[in-house]
Amino acid sequence: MEVQTGKISPTDFKQFIEHRCGKHRQEVIAGPQFGVDVSIVGLPNGMAMAMASDPLSLIPSLGLKESAWLSVQLAANDIATTGFPPMYGQFVLNLPATFSQKDFEAYWDYIHLFCSDLGIAITGGHTGFVEGNNSTIAGGVTFTTIAKQDLLLTTKSATVGDVILVSKGCAISSAAILAMSFPETAKNKAGAEHYNIACESFYDISVMKDALTAVGDRANNGITAMHDVTEGGVLGAIYEMAVASGNGAIIYNDQLPIRETQSRICEVFSIDPRYCIGAGAMVITCKKEAKAKIIAQFEANAIPCTEVGEITEKLKGVTLMEKETLSDLIYNEKDPYWGAFFNALHQNWK
Image (tube, rainbow, N blue to C red):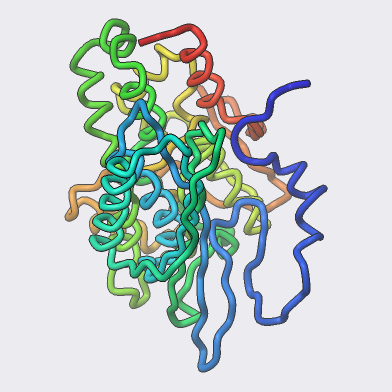
């Protein structure tokens, strides 16, 4: 039996979950759906609540501070796609029974610090210690925010003719975590300079600034949708956004922002930076007439932003233009990062 790692596949989601989501309530505006980062529930007086859940990370090879950073930022990134920061957080901690009180205090202090920095009030949850739990997943977190319903963005609202932008670059989180987890290998095969840059980019994983820069003052900003890049990488995120919005897309491979460091680290671990977990990048769609202004806003905030394609009619499918050849983009249901990480672990790479 094949071991499954990473998120549930779109096929399994459709088969097992999509039509089994409890009681139907008309106030649920956006529920569970492939390629959609958040759920949205309508509230009185034109308001709505956006919610997003993610696992809590506890990765010994990274450290307590770094694990806490991942835990907070990855869930916050999903909420950021609405164009608003998270406001409230519920944490469920299922910690290893061997986790010391000293380490627990340090880990939670970092969670508290990073939530405070983002303006998130921790409103409750559950904390426990579980015998036999040696996973790098230590529970889960749900963040929520409340805003005017007509201002909350979702990936479903991308429209035909929109320009596709990508902030920062591909494979930021994959390269950073692989380099930090296997430092000797990364230094020896990619070089000390690229190892150091990859490690420094770990703190580029947040896209909160990217999102708030994109929406600007919200007045006729031209933004139609945003999607956080996670499993499947930048190409997977664009594919998900196209499917979620009921459209197609054309992506220009030569325009994808792949930095040398991420390329070199990914090469060491034999993965394609276009397709692997890329937290730290945001896919943004906008009206063509807004493109120049939005890119200028990113430049003013020292955040790279690149035009990579366009949303098209659904019948055209999701396509990739590579070396003047147009082909259908194949969606990888299994992110290559997981195989690379566990392969390196099993080979005792240091």
